[in-house]
Each structure stands twice: as C-alpha cells, then as structure tokens.
Amino acid sequence: MRVVVPAGLAAAVRRREGAAGEAWLRELPELVAAACARWRCQVAGSPLHGETALVLPVECPGQAAVLKISFPHQHCAAEAAALERFGGAGAVRLLASSADSSTLLLERAGPATLETVRAEEATEIAGELARRLAVPAPAGARSLASTAGPWLAQLDQQAVPGLLPEREVDQARELIAHLADDQTGTMLHGDLHFGNVLRARREPWLTIDPVGWRGTAAFDAFTVVARIKRAYDLTALITRFSQAAQTDPGLTARCCQARAVSAYLHQEHTGGAWFDRDVLLALISGTSPPRPWPR
Image 1 (cartoon, one colour):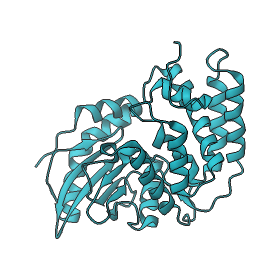
Image 2: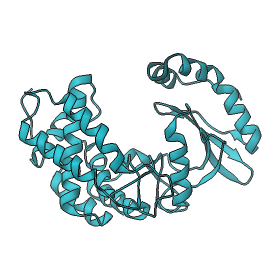
Image 3: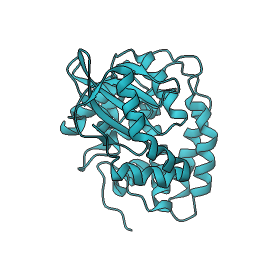
Image 4: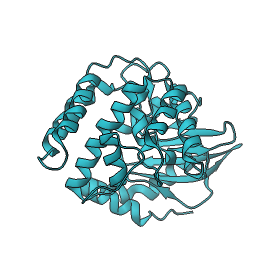
C-alpha cells in the first residue's frame, strides 16, 4: 500500500522547513516502505499527522503498533530517549527505532483521548501521569533550566508596552529566573495536554509525544489547564493537577502564569489562536473562572 502524504502535513513541513522539507516529503513514501520491510509491518489504516510527523497504524507480527516518521530534528532523539526511559510506565512503549530516531515503532493506543473526559477528572489523570513520568532523567537529557535564557529573550522581545500590564510580565520574568536554577533530576513530559493522552488497553491512559526534558513537572500544568473549552475554575484545576502530580502548588501556579504570558504575547504577535485568549488572560491575572476581556 503506497502512502499518500496528507495535505496538512505537507503544508506544515513546507512552511517550517522549506527546501529540506520538500525533499523529505518526496522521500516519505519510500521511508514508510523501508520501515515496514525492516520491522515486517503492514499499514493497517489511514494516516494521521502533526506538524512534523506522519503517523500510521500498522500490523506487525503478533501486535498492533504505530509507525511514526518525523522530519529529522533534534527532538526525535529526545523523544526516543524519553520513551525508552519511561519504559511503558505511563507512556506508550518504544518498540523499535531507526539509527537517527526519526522513525519510531510504537505501541498502539487510542484513538480516544483525555479530551473525551470531564475537565476535572482529566486534569487529575494528567497530573497522576506527570507524577509517574517523573523518573530519573537519562544522561544528556536537556534541562528545563537550559531553556530559561532563550525563553526570557523571547519574552523581552515580544513584551511590547501596552499588550499586558508590566507587573504581570515581571511576574513571568521572576518565574523564568527561578527555573534557570532548577536542579530537578527527573523527567517531565514537556507537552502534556489532553490530546497527548490516549485511552489504552495495557493501562487506562498512556501519554505520547514527550519532549523529554529534565525538570519540574510543575511546568506541564499549563498545557493541561490552558486548553479548556468551558469556563472552569482554573485555580481549582491547577490545584487538582498539583495534588495529583505532587508538585509545589505555588510553583505550579506560577508556571501557569508565566507560560500564559508567553503564549498570549506570541499569539498577539503571530495572529495564532492555539489557546483561548480569555483563558490565557485569566491565567495571567489569576482571575478564575475566565471572564471576557476587552479587545
């Protein structure tokens, strides 16, 4: 079965990677065929995709699996290393990988995600998974602390006067400075949101697509609570996550505030709409539940 590259993936890769992305897209069907031959798999369903990867359900000898082929980048090796370190506890199992980790054979889970569960329960489940994923980090895992410098530089560039009160931007700066000294020795997912938690058979829920950083799990609270679709009590959700994840509640709330500041400023500059504007402003100011803000 020759795979047709989804139009959405093709557009995203061309936009992000230019000529190199175009070359990879031309090669992608052959990469799928080679991986299937290597691991004796057959494509067993329609392709899925994100911004940089093609995901295919496959049938391998004795098991259902997923083939994930990513545009080669640094995150590939970090994802593979994280999945190997998690060892299937709270995350899908890594069954095999290519030498450069751009092609992964993974345990199949889903398609149902935590988005199908009430926000309160889903937040608690995500927090419990964050706690379980906080295992000792492998040597060479990128630290959350190392991201503080670039994060602060981007914040300073985007914090144009008038977009947000200076006091709230300064609160974000203080949190980033604090994380620059973070010495946590355990893993965090790095992109833990309801869409990255899949219903599974081996365990009730398993995470996918870890970033694979070393640092406090409090960092992951933002993406868990920031994508709510109704006016939930954000403070209560942050508390639920913190209790389940066993993170410091104050640090967890401050991570949410700082990440909301960055997300809001980024959306204002790029015109993106990854997060609801009122939810971001509520997290920034500590107003809960969200209330409409003037535009």
